[in-house]
Image (cartoon, rainbow, N blue to C red; front, side, top):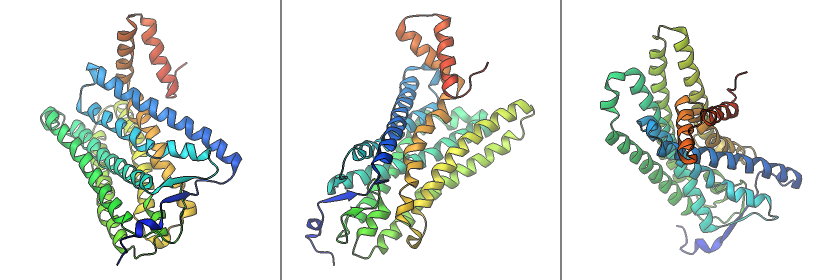
Length: 334
């Protein structure tokens, strides 16, 4: 039986962070600041372009806009606090701040898992069922799918948060991580965490592995359809796009599975605290580059939006925008 006054046992946590070396912290501060700025600017740009451009009002870009919003919230749940901690001698977070951080981080991570599956399903319908695409992926269906993604992510996180913070944290106040996450919090509890582990494996596992299987299944059907394309150029272009998408999917799902869906006896908090950097910080930066900014339709839409606000119709301005985007994405040609 957990005492009613267990919350008085800990009012705040001390985060051990990624390193305790001052010089390394300075380097990491600059690195994560640059990554965060790129993430926010890149995803904000996608939200603005898709919202303002009439050429991008399709189901695919509807989901990409949702992904950009989720990515900005996802990375903002940890990085601002991480940057502040790099400049602090003692890295503290209040109990309720820890609750809020865990809930938001798990929420947006879960939403992204399900959203990636919905996006893969959209691409499956577009490529494998092109004649029925408009009928199947109606705006009503897209809205329902987006709402379902958010509901699943928020409810999944709520379950994890409730079961995590019902525990008494009486072993230590030092959290061996750079943010409040489930594994390091369970390590601080002096109560039985069996129920928490069951919740992670069932609720969390269903969201993560279920979304992953649906995503992979969609891409299997997509690749099968690509193989039927007659022209080698068409197949090569389609495979190039799918390969980049799958790279992000494997990086995201793989690191999440490694963090949560494995026996607690294999946890190594000193090593595992680096893994969330990949799926919680790096992936949100890569998503707009992989899914959107490499797209020629996005290049054209950005040019039109800029021309609309500058009031200029100069062909030079349009070419300059396209060249800049191509250069950023490593696609500039000599």
